[in-house]
Image 1 (cartoon, rainbow, N blue to C red):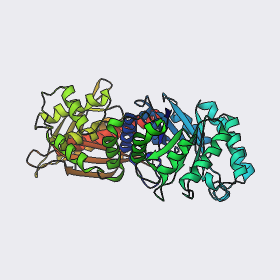
Image 2 (image 1 turned 90 degrees about the horizontal axis):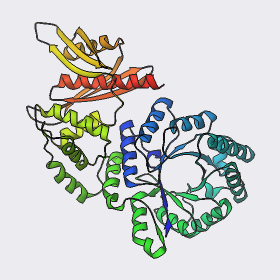
Image 3 (image 1 turned 120 degrees about the vertical axis):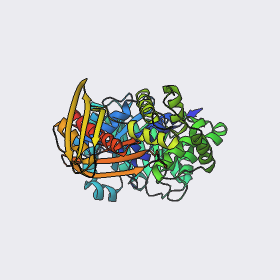
Image 4 (image 1 turned 120 degrees about the horizontal axis):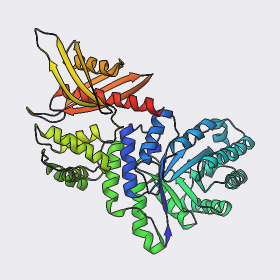
Length: 461
């Protein structure tokens, strides 16, 4: 039985911009699905993108984390730096191979492109033992040039070669024959990426697999081979044609629906939505619930958190539950607020706010850092302004407040409020979320969350 390796490219979609938290959650879901390879785009922002990959590496143990190397020496170095903690790391050298693509995107003639590929693969291999060479727009490349550039990549040490039908210009049979010719040239594992512009990408990919290809690049949404339909094809046809994959088939619909909800903002399966709604309605947590009960409720919402994140969520549930029962909406807000975060440099111990129409608003804030108790007292234009000034007094720095939003998560007298704070520091935005039945408390927690991200970034830069 031939094993088809699945390399998911959802996070490389050019039509979507994902937040830091959304990218981590998609990576968690792909790891849970047991995708063989999780592909990430080139490192654009050295601080945040490297932090993202390193954070993902802390919980991704089964899938290969693959990062695109870009087109400069520095971008190759950044890819290697981001992957230095990954259990299974891969660097991708991606280049256009059609005459127009080479000239337009990289401003290189064929001979210079050959030199670059040899250099890039060699350099990447010095820093990472697994390097993949990807030939974009390969079906429109000159056949002799494509053969030469693949040979150079293989000779330089590439462990996998992938070819892309970026233009969707071939029918399945023709693409399968093209893929076979690449397999004959490379003599190492070959992967394919097929554009679904014509709705036949899955057919192209499965025919290529029958002709020797061992890896298929998929995505949830976008123009690559649709992940769910391709996995369905493997499941339904695999026994008859002698191929399979190692994905977790029992959770395909739930996981892909979760990723689709993050990527598109809509659930893709009505029956799943109904089932999920019933499960969410059954969530009722109070301060007596232990960490196991809270983790089970979190799982009902579709999250797969680490032990550390489950501990944080449990602590926050206990805090909120002192004033009201925690349902699905509150729990979802808690997960968004305290899970998938950077380590806490500052922790809120307590706060006292004084406010009225005949006195100036004042705040007394107590934080802890590395076991030390720190206190700030300040007067402000309002209770929230006073609280922020008191925090700034403690940390010894005043940050530019770029945005501040508050909203209600639930309804009623005991509604849980959510606050969003965005701080600008060194030309970069840092956002923090906080929730509480007290909107001032939610705002304080959001501010501290943003500050912790700044401190973490400074420490790791």
